[in-house]
Figure 1 (tube, rainbow, N blue to C red):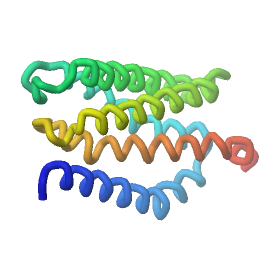
Figure 2: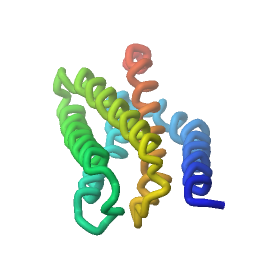
Figure 3: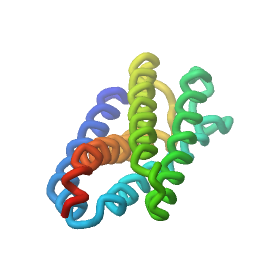
Length: 164
């Protein structure tokens, strides 16, 4: 198997496994706790996205990777990490803007993720030397994807959630 096949097989396996875990365990547990707590737990999955800034450190990944791809991924992730952390604090302190900011943050982060996937496909990322970042893409990115989808699901059920 070549790098590209291995990458997509591992990425797909991660998404499938994390989806099963979410359906069987995470979602049932989330539905038993208050809305703001459920959102905060899911937002914590996005806080470590600041790790993406490591893409800008010379020697960490292949120097032939386009700088526009690297900087877009790095700064997009940094912004998402900051927004997620801000949302967690606003949820914990019951600010009225917390839920609208969670919507904005989740939309921003999801679009950033989609742009990253488009870039990954355009440059055929698995053909480059990604070093340890290989694991970020095949494991952490699927965690982020599933967390985004769960946040959208929680937010879409927010009205009925609050009546429990």
